[in-house]
Image (tube, rainbow, N blue to C red; front, side):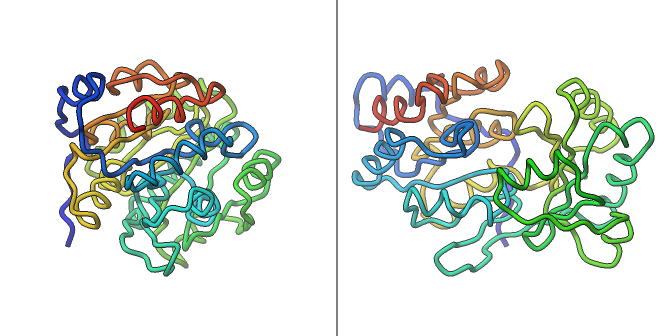
Length: 297
């Protein structure tokens, strides 16, 4: 059984200096977030970013996708960049190989904890302010379909299933891979995060955000850092110093902390930029391509 590493990892501060000096630092794995990093508002990867990724691959650098999205929603981007690696989905709760469809790694939320979280999210102070999304067997389930849910499903290009009472639905099914609360405003999600971080410990749930209005919960050991670590060390036999990661939000912090060299997008929150060793231009300025061209090509 793969042993989970800690959420925040030690990393080499010397690596950035070596890269800037142009020395031969052996980066063998590049792990990329999707939304806000290589996928913009148009839901596409730009030609320049795609060319930079292809150029890195031509130098023998493996490229992986690490996203909070559902596996089925992220798979088309995995195919676009022609990755030969398993795909890290649901913020690291699921690692699946699109070439064989084999699930290599899955950490769902324990049922009792999931039911407890649903109960908290459905309390009166939150009920009108958040839409709850459940992910089970790579399917999206909600109590009822709203305009916000329809927009989310359209961007993710996935069907949505309305099942009525979510607590009853979960009790009759299985443990969910992820629970997402889509808020009416960033202020609502900030308040929700603060409240639930006081209710659930880090040994119960991993709580994070991938956008200002997304509150996301997974198994306490499921995050992008553990996912990238699994690919690097268990699949490829690499060390953290041979890994480069690029991301733009709080759910990327664990993989930015793990990697020997980490890059935050210019559109990332300041707290995320502080974790990274270099800050790229924004996604509108094709920051991933700039980072790849500067440090890997």
